[in-house]
Image 1: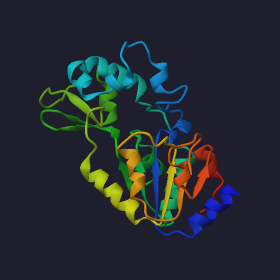
Image 2: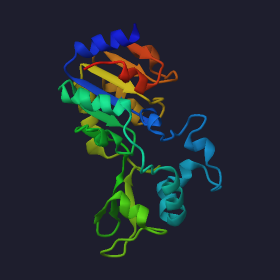
Image 3: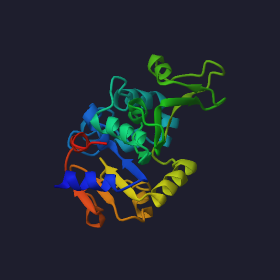
Length: 241
């Protein structure tokens, strides 16, 4: 019944926005952060909590250790798009889905074929020199030993991802708010909706088709028009566009 209702809501909509979190990529074998087997629970060898290891201050003060942790835990170069990524790209092709807003940094939405992807937390595929701003791809980071250095000026190359204690890109945030505000349907998937300011984006939705798809309950379940506690890949595999 829930899948039928979701299918019907999609059929009735013409301006859909999808907002997703780590749960969208777990079916591509990318661990999330807060679940039982997430990054926060399983990585103890560094002697620091992951929030500190992935912070702006730690990057600046312990760059080599940062990169050791970052390469081992946040880069999954063999990951492939799963059913959810592929279904969203297909829904975009129909013209109904206007944008994918994601908290993920893995680039799998683009790999699946999605065109309008707003990456709130950046991407591991983009990197730049702190001195001269020369850009580098992911392979350059993977091929570097220790701290990646700029081939032009020798400066430190950093990933274009939002670290703890850093602000989200205001342009991307504003564009995400605009998409959500104008949407006639908002599908939120694979996110616990506890990380702000990203979780607060849901407050800008003004329509009557708020759908939450997540394995566990979220603080916004009571406000949703449809709640499905299941795997997002499984749910999207059951739909037809």
